[in-house]
Structure formats: C-alpha cells, structure tokens
Image (cartoon, rainbow, N blue to C red):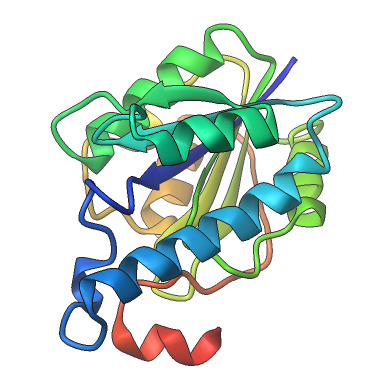
Amino acid sequence: MFSLNIFSKCPYRGKPKTRLKDLLSKSEREYISILMLKNLLDETHKLDNFIDINLWVYPDCEHIFYRKLEKDYKLNLMNQEGENLFDRMMFCLNNESSRSDKTLLIGSDIPSLNSNIILDALSLLNSKDVVLGPSKDEGFYLIGIKGFFDNEILNANENLSCKQVQNNVLSKSMSFGLLNKLKDIDEPNDLLFL
C-alpha cells in the first residue's frame, strides 16, 4: 500500500505565507494558498485509484473549505500533530509508515509538483530506501520512505537541508534517490516563478 501525505496550512486559520505579508494582503495570501493546494490536488487526484491520499491540515481540518475538498477529491483529512513543523512531519511519517509499504510527504506550496514526479518518487522507492525532492532553497519539497520511518533520518532539526538528510541517510547505511529540484513559494522573490 502507498500513502501520499500532503501538508497544508488552513488559508483561513493557519496564517499561510506570512513571509509574503509585506507584499501581499491577507486575502491575497489566502488566495495563492488555495490556488496552489487545488492545483496540487488536481494532480494527485489522477493517482487516487492506487494510492491513499491524506491531507494533513494545520491547525485543524474542521473548516468547511477542507470538508468540501475531502468530498470533491476523495481525501482522508487529518490534523497535523506536534509543536512545530518538524514534529508534525515526524508524527505523520511515523504514523503512515507503520501501515504503508511506501510513504510520501509533500508540501502544498510547490506549483510545479505534478503526478509524474510523484510517480517517479514511488518508482525510485522500488530500489531506494529514501527519496528526496530537493527545493531550490536547499530544503526539500518531498520525502519518501520505504518501510518504517527511522526518526534519525530527519534528526530533530526543523531547518533541515536536503544535504543534511542525505548525510543522515548515508550514515544509516541506507540508499537514497533524488528527484528534480523544484521551487517552493516562501519569499516574495519566489512569486516570480509562478
């Protein structure tokens, strides 16, 4: 069984894209967050016949916006659990990898992420223990694991770079594969890539 996990901040209650607040109004940040999430869900919906899709929401998934997405896209809604993004990622990966052969975790702010890249990640997990999708800001937009998640792969650092994760994987004598580098939308200059 495959588990695809998408992390999303509620556009209405999660204060999305706060690093863009000097450039965009609150309603504009809400709009761009919704647009990127729906774009990603349109892509992942192409895969829903053979993959379990979970939408993990911060601070919670009770907003009517998410209930409509749940119905329209046949998603499993989950609340993100943990004090910070790192803790929430660890919770998700531990939870999902305990019941899935392959587990993917992606963010919802990567406009160029598509179903083919997700399929490439799943394919790489046939021969690799870990798959990473590096982002242009040195972080990562996707982490995929085969089997049960080893917490030491992420190693308790909220600002973990893709290179650090690669080193952690290698130190555990595990193999990894890399996907193409993509751009996530965090800073004002990132909007030029849309």
